[in-house]
Length: 166
Image 1: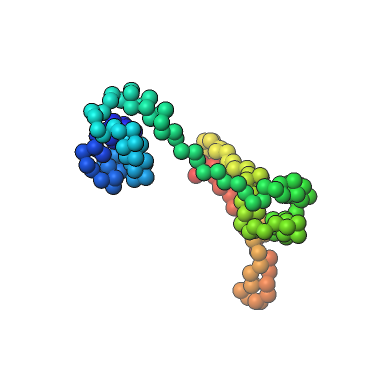
Image 2: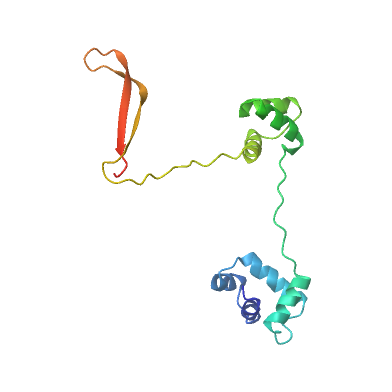
């Protein structure tokens, strides 16, 4: 972001919304720089060069810290890790934490556990072959359907063959 251009637009009397639209930055950022420039009396004199502006900005306008989120489940971390290692389901973990004084929501527990146990991404391998060289086959039960003649429920199987070239 060009601070000098931003300050020139503000100094020319453009609104925060207009500056935001023109530079593609958030209005809150424009407001923050407007207040900073006013405080440092940058509009009462010709604007310094970009290097001087950058140095002044680094000294007097620190970047805002990102929001810090602390989970309400954090004090129960040891308990959560222990019971999840015992393959306890998520709902049961939540119930056990409530027994120990946890007052948060199930969603908080769910987010905490999923952050502790990230899922492995699905991996697929592309098979490159010449036509007719290889096929992949899968076979298995897909459920029960009524037999069209007798009406009796019967197991249904499926056979799938995929030619690797197709």
